Image 1 (tube, rainbow, N blue to C red):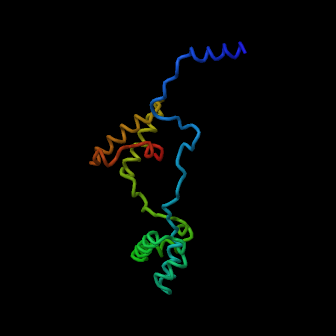
Image 2 (cartoon, rainbow, N blue to C red):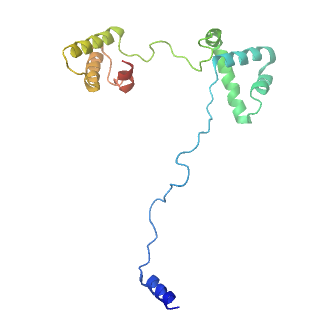
Image 3 (tube, rainbow, N blue to C red):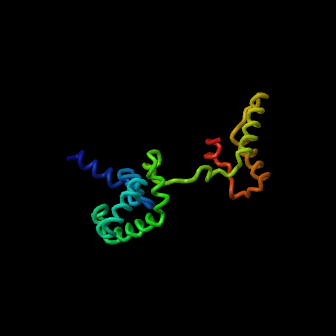
Length: 171
């Protein structure tokens, strides 16, 4: 009994803790929201099969056959998407006709993202080789500066070509 009384005295003498202020700790829940997979892009071969089915059966049966489990708003969105596929029928047919591109979901023409000309990139590559031949290590910062100077010489504006790490990695 005396020990119990002593323990009670110790707990009363300790100062009360203040309530925590600020953001609560979130170490026990999921750190990141799970992906919802809302945006689905279909392949060119699937787009072509939807277009061919539409030609024979019409829009309502196409939506029911391919996308029957959608809600009304999603079904309306898919209807508009099918009409946009019909507008791009020629491109979809050419992409779906090749086995190499039929499984692709989007297509960009070759060199669409390239802003430096092939001659300018060749000149940069020659500069890198000359520097390495002289025993000077070429850093990414040096390559970026030279690429930006080459872009200025070509008349490319600052916001059009940044010589970012993607470009350096591809170089």
